[in-house]
Length: 493
Ligand code: NAD
Image: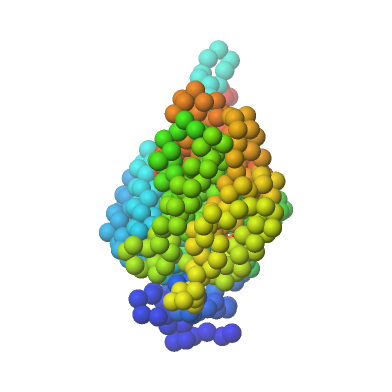
């Protein structure tokens, strides 16, 4: 389909989506995508999609800008990133509105997500002029040589993000990459094109030179072209395992390093000695109130000790049923729609199969109709007595569905928790500190949070093992992902 700026005009309130390549903001691409508002089921914008040609231009712009950005004084990079953090914070309402427009996320969550993103940008802005650039590895001695390491930026980073939290994904990848002196080409999901537009505007307003940050919205072809481009020196990917396999295979051709942030089926272990009120509220909100269950690190497998199992399941079911699912713009909505019809189909099929395999429906379990029939609304759904070997316990739903299974003791809880291919997050509820220390060590996950601590915070690394990926975002570890290490030695000759 050929496109013109006129045919691409979006609905009122939505930004014109363009490809941000170097200094250029281009309203046409090689194809278009009809953006469907998940809340209404209606097309509200035609989005230009970049393909391999636009990716090539963007990578070349980023490559040219690398020399400038890398040579900029560290203080200049720090100042620009801290200004970006402030600009994003100043535009909280705008980003929250775009988040809802992008993927239907409820306004309450949308605001919290902007605040979290600001923290990430500010955190890496703070590192930019305090970079741990190396360490002395050997001092001059008798017959010895002076040696040190030198952390070097890669050059162009190819960042591929998914649709569930565009601003958080940008904040988790871009500031760390830029703080380390790299330049970036981002490929947002075609499903959520709006947030990156405001972000790119603010990157420019923050004084970051043209070409340092580029946006080419597109689909799989654009993503593949970015991964394969020889001037892209590292790939940072957030998405699903099937795509991750293709990306890893493509990177293997040139031994290109790749950071993978993938899915999860994170276990939430509730012991009888826990604060059950706090555990029930937190577990239920985390399962449903964060992006309607469409986030990677959520506690989607609830494992409950049998002496409190019935009581706890009843509590969680009641709290879940009290969460309003509906128009994401209404102040009392906790769960907005899921992303699209495909998500509804997947969720319905998984819930049906779980029941065929013996799971008991506690609440939810059917798409909402009436006034909500045109949007993609699926209510918080709790399934109890889920067989740990069944699909629902083993595979990510990426929707508002919680699988509950009982356990009798700590050993069984641990075996169940570690009994999937994923390894992203682990949640523990207990008042026994010795137990929590044992479990922290034994859980095979990239992160463990105990008794309701927040996760995905800027100062702590976040990343998975197994089918949940490799590498980290967040913390000093997240910064180190964007350097390669040179080992240097000076002889006496
Ligand atoms: P996906 O893998 O289908 O798509 C992710 C991105 O990859 C999109 O931008 C897509 O256009 C692009 N892509 C598709 N094919 C490609 C290819 N061949 N080469 C390069 N890029 C390609 O994932 P999704 O279904 O959109 O996202 C949901 C998944 O993301 C879930 O598994 C979820 O758990 C995961 N996720 C992980 C994190 C994390 O930080 N660990 C965060 C959010 C979501």
